[in-house]
Length: 301
Picture (cartoon, rainbow, N blue to C red):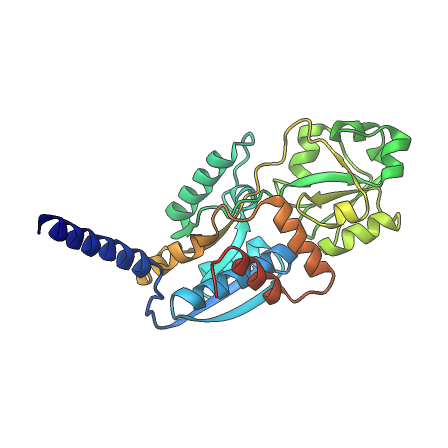
């Protein structure tokens, strides 16, 4: 009899644990609409779709999408104005661009702490834990250029920059964490710095319209064009871990929302993101790319 009672209690306890575990993954019954936005950049568009799919899977919230924002500063302004509810960005970008930090580069953990605390204190916004990859800037050249001039690290550019053109993304020539700060740290000034849509940088480099570009480390075209990456030997560029930003008021209205988005935390490494960026470049639909990854990780049905 005692054995049967013990067995019965064990079954009851086990059932309770399973029910609790399942309840944690049950969809929430929130009502409302969430405005998800992104910069017009491959990986942020893909991340926006991942967020949309997760939110709709687990919260019951409806969503709208706008993936045409020109930069992180514009996204920040839109959130401050209450026009959007969720977007992804990079920690280093917002630490220097929005919080105007001008000190030495920090570790990924310290960069995240600083940007999260700074946004909560100054803007009433918070950050989710990073999704895993660090998409930093890195100077890149054509392989024949690297061989001809024996270029291995960024400081090797000093002898050539006065006669060369540098290509960067649309904000690279003005952001503190980009060319102005890099030029000061290295003591190197290019003849011209040409901002352009980041997708055009690689074609400009391969067509010899520029001599060097500030590439994104997770961009699939680095491998596609066999570009040579120059070591950031003066360690200028900060950590650019990707994560999501949302208003604190929204986390109070929907307490489970952060946990839903953080299902992505630590799940995407540089190799996985580069592969998804390549799929995007080759014309695959970003929603399909996002859904395939989430299914692979068993995060959506």
